[in-house]
Amino acid sequence: MALVLGVDSSTQSCKVVVVDSVTGAIVRSGRAPHPDGTSVDPEAWWVALQQAIADAGGLDDIEAWAIGGQQHGMVALDAEGRVIRDALLWNDTRSAQAADDLIGEFGASVLADRTSLVPVASFTITKLRWLRDHEPDNAARVAAVALPHDWLTWRLRGFGPERPDLKELVTDRSDASGTGYWNPRTGEYDRELLVAALGHDAVLPRVLGARESVTDAAGRRVAPGAGDNAAVALGVGARTGDVVVSIGTSGTIFAVTDRGVADPSGIVAGFADAADGYLPLVCTLNAARVLDVIARLLDVDHDGLSTLALEASPGAGGLELVPYFEGERSPNLPEATASLNAMTLASTTRENLARAAVEGMLGGLRFGLDALRELGIPLDRVLLVGGGAQSGAVREIAPLVFGLPVEVPEAAEYVAVGMARQAASVLD
Ligand SMILES: Nc1ncnc2c1ncn2[C@@H]1O[C@H](COP(=O)(O)OP(=O)(O)O)[C@@H](O)[C@H]1O
Ligand SMILES: O=C(CO)[C@@H](O)[C@H](O)COP(=O)(O)O
Image (cartoon, rainbow, N blue to C red):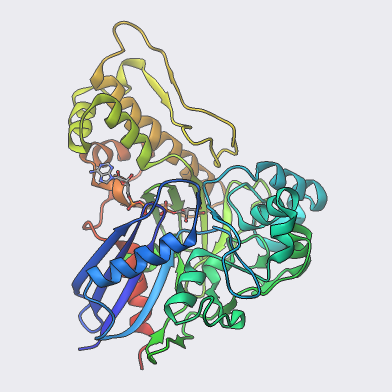
């Protein structure tokens, strides 16, 4: 029996599973929290990764491992392998103007053609432009740019300020495709775009093929890893016709396709997947935390919120929650705020508020389903995953809002499971 280890370094926490590579059974698991905020010192993720691995019994008996992580976060390194400043995360909207500037300079269709993305504040390229514009001294020191999963892979392989070999940074197709300076159709970095954003060239992680591997300091196999959404696709075994809806910190709606998508409207991101295909995806900034904040307001836990929501009628008596608590990315409204509409003396009950939170959050995700459908992507059934899929009310109300059959795979950490599968696939 060979044991493999898969990691999900997500926005809110780090989760690790140890899996029997032959049976696929999860034999151990561990986790550790991440700090709040949209700008985070990557060192906190490294500490959490080591805690979560220790919690899962350590690496001694592991033969291969892979790391999946939140996409897009800018980890800027100097020539000595030190992190230059806190990483700006996918949900940090300060680079919205930088996104507009890049679109103004190149044009949305040209960028969609060259990278399969039209920049919004989430993508790494806009964060580099923000750095150049607002912290030019920091920008000038950047020798390499990595994403969270790339940087953690490098650290766990034994690199870092003590062994700063920047050429050993590696990534995979899925995470490279979320930067805004990689072309999923050619498989090449677009260095002109990198330079236009950062102001100069820099080392970028080598993009490993799905079946390639490297090794760590102890000689274990290390698989390429992935962005967390591509890792979920591996974990749930998504097929043509499936649309995965993940309700985590982000809400993501995505399908696995053979052909790439370049949507000049920018609503659908034309990501690559972690195998040889593509992962057209819509991402909302407001998902599980919409339920968290309303549960806190109503002074109930998640089960309590679910019970209240199911006690109200569909439509919540007219009460409508517009869920843009963190601004929004899809639609692109970085400055938007949330609001509660149609409050009357009759409609303003605890039950209706709970239901409006669930319906409002799911309505935001429905926007993504419609966008995928408009591109002709087949949508036969929804696979609902992520922390928010644990809610009974979400499971019951989702088919009504989505107008599609909804299946909820057995609760599991599918990013970490997908990464354990990838690690198993690079064993001889
Ligand atoms: N039973 C539940 N009902 C609704 N939300 C839940 C439930 N359990 C966990 N969550 C929420 O799910 C989120 C964590 O989900 P997860 O998919 O792990 O997110 P991420 O990968 O972004 O860290 C948290 O905001 C948490 O409060
Ligand atoms: O920005 C995106 C996808 O484009 C997000 O899905 C991030 O990848 C964060 O994921 P979670 O931590 O919410 O799982």
